[in-house]
Length: 585
Image (cartoon, rainbow, N blue to C red; front, side):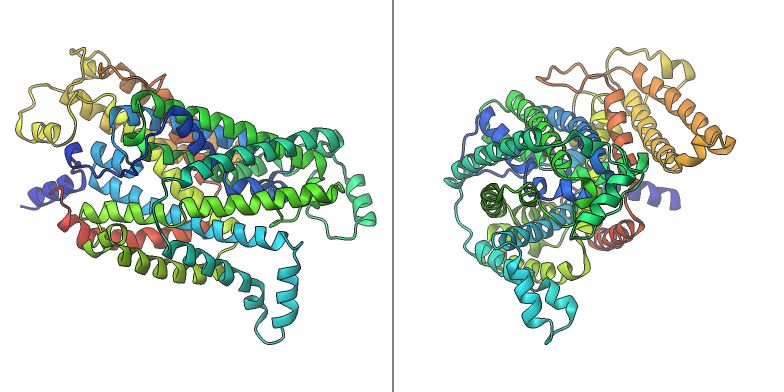
């Protein structure tokens, strides 16, 4: 009885969503490949481009931020390739939540959706802070200084420093209440994306004109001289040079810089609106990511060439670099573009992605049904916005900008890892998906027998139920081993010092990973013709998982504590309600 109960419980956790019942989001537009590229670039090169480089270069990576943005861009490109294959294999408007639900089951879909809610919420808080910065910069920080001087004597210092956020939150609330059709707004979005790219190109060119290559090889003498001549406090010097904070600084900077590239996934929500989704979606993802990598690399290089990294303040923004070189008119131009860009970015989707994911999960029965009304009913949306803005007003007091960036990144990294895991699984499964295969697994007796020879020399040239199970188990083991490897590598000083303990563990893990990867490589792959497939399977999805986990290991203990609390709340909802009420059952 206990065995049967555990078996039924396990089957509930891996129930898969039938494709014919997938929720479709449509806006009525028809998007070309160029439209998708514009959408991807506009969302990826978002508000982060105006403050992220300052945040990372000031005390995390210094000039080596250019390496950080390349590492983060490579990580996102690997995830983008996995998204691109799924967009051709599952031609439905969706996200990582949908891809997990139709591939590896309900529990992982819930984890992904719950993480997406966290990521989008953190992104909304970041937009609040970015617009607050932009509004303050238009008056050269006079608003924050005036507020601080006028009310700091009447209220505690903590509230005086954050009072401008309430003003911005009110504006966002007002903007959300007047939610309306946004078909014509997409044209404005594309125009502002073009203007933003032109302005950022001007910033990059300015960096090569006014920049000094010596800022990439600063020494302690330069630091002392800057302290004698400067009127403002300096940040940490580190060891100077191009990598002042060492390899650990590059890893930590890469983890924070990952926030820069997480907007491309909006493209997969537009499958039903594109002319030829099997071709335009993969091309839109890859091209938009490549453009974004070039932009972030150029902006980071220009910033660190124009200003010594220890003169950058955490919380400062990109336009302030022009005050440093004495180009005041350029400062105001970039500030105005930044302000408009944040407004357009927020108007396009401030709380909309959060509400859409919650709606999809509620429609599937994983969340309470009353939450489904937040997307379909006007009053439900307004009520949800009121609740969300109230939570946001509370959250800005307890989270700094770096905390929000970490929360946004860790949720997205987990989602990307699960998508890569799904690609690894689905390529080696029998041709049919969804409940049909699930029913076949449950009702058809398995004639195949698992032998050592069958692991490396399968009899069938096409995927079978047995080979699919082998890949599923091996992929799960690889995900666990890669996580353990990243945990050991996180203590890399012990490896460099020649400590035999960590080195032995790393070698053993690499041997196991290589052997299990060989087993997966020998299994037959699906021969279904697709316009795009992830190349070099199973290596690229495994590399994507490995890099994602490595970046997650750079998050602080506080970030993992907050994330753990969030997941505990989610698991309480799922195991007390969602697992019983799921419509897939």
